[in-house]
Amino acid sequence: NFTPNAFVEDCVKELQEKVKGDKVVLGLSGGVDSTVAAVLLNKAIGKNLYCIFVNNGLLRKNEFENVLHQYKDMGLNVRGVDASQRFLKALEGIEDPEQKRKTIGRVFIEVFDDEAHQIEDVKWLAQGTIYPDVIESVSVKGPSATIKSHHNVGGLPDYMKLQIVEPLRMLFKDEVRRVGKTLGIDDELLGRHPFPGPGLSIRILGAITQEKVNILQEVDAVFINGLKEHGLYDQVWQAGAILLPVNSVGVMGDERTYEKVVALRAVESTDGMTADWVHLPYDFLMKISNEIINKVKGVNRVVYDISSKPPATIEWE
Ligand code: XMP
Image 1 (cartoon, rainbow, N blue to C red):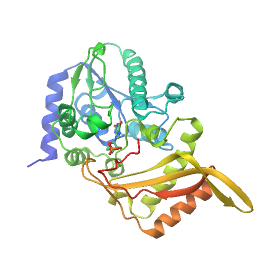
Image 2 (tube, helix red, strand yellow):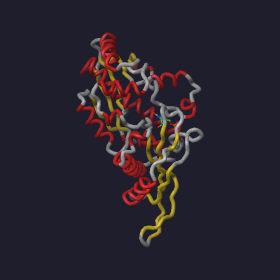
Image 3 (cartoon, rainbow, N blue to C red):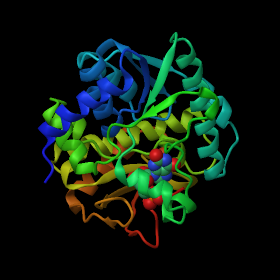
Image 4 (cartoon, rainbow, N blue to C red):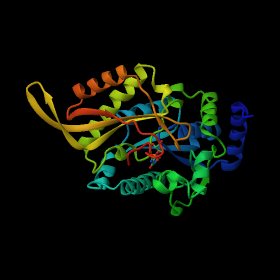
């Protein structure tokens, strides 16, 4: 029987004994796991925890600024690094999804490594690895490990020569959330949908450009804010928009248009291994579709993805 209070108490003590007066570096992602890991470590070792939050330019609209603010308000010693242009440049012309993931993984490590090297005498690398990540990386045959190479598990190079500390490695997701609540982390942050490490890059089918990122961020924001406003966000496990690599004909006033198509996706799931599409209300879909087409320049058609996993996956790439 898991009790978050006892976990926090034991964990803080263990962390203090383990890292003593050493410096620890941790990569924050904006997600639940890395945030809870950071707050735990902050409680244990305070300013000896150095958090790095990298903007890869593929986050949701305004996410980097908003989440960085929240982190600072939580008292975390965090440095925000805007590497958007570096990622965008590295991704130029790449269409293959696995190549996108590898490129983003590589650039992330380069950026993180540059930053970590500026912290004098850092000894430990903390990660927000949770139990399902451990299992997934052990069972090489796990579907997502082989079908899509998720780069965020155990992805840092040996040459960093840091010892690893993973305070959440025995916990399931719901336990991580309960620990987060005990630690006083905001419900909104704890209830956030999962978001893939490669971000919007795998929701822009085909090659990535700044213009496409901008369009998708706008579309995604209309959809996600709509879900929140209509009380649907917490009923959905994960949601997002996909920018398709096709144009379709439309009509705007007297003009013929030839613009982008976006797909909306919302799924129910417990662990992401299987998923069902959510039967969002028609009225809601109608409203969101109108809002997207009216507000977002360059989009003239919205479709809703009604495929379940398997055989489809949650992401399109
Ligand atoms: P799929 O598309 O495989 O997604 O059904 C299952 C879950 O994993 C997320 N996902 C990723 N997460 N790096 C990540 O950190 C990735 O490369 C990646 N690809 C998919 C996806 O958003 C869903 O939650």
